[in-house]
Amino acid sequence: MTGGTTSDWRCAATLLRVYIALRVRGLHRVLVATNATPLGAPSPDDDRIEAARRIARAVERTAALLPLRARCIEQSIAMLVLCRRRGIPCRLQIGARPLPFAAHAWVEVDGVAVNGDTELLTGFAPFPEPER
Image (cartoon, rainbow, N blue to C red):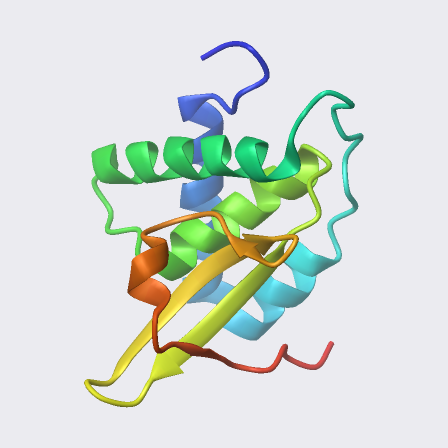
């Protein structure tokens, strides 16, 4: 891919690192490390929300091709890493809905959900951010 988008190989490498890190280090340590990643230099002409959505589409497309099952948590953390490298400040949200019970992870930029089906988020209450 060109034009400032995230390459499929970079998405695949990031998804694999996140997948392994979650199983070896656990969610809390992965989130602490991810949130400590410094922001890269932002592209001055990029709309942050649209740039994050392009990254989300690249991550989703790549996740569908990998032999492992990258769920919403792996995809959202990978997206968070890739967005931060591109200088896009974003926030991982993890939430649940009571009935029928379901948990979900997504990424927000300026308070807007940018990955996955935003209609799916109806009824999900975000958990508070973990202590660092």
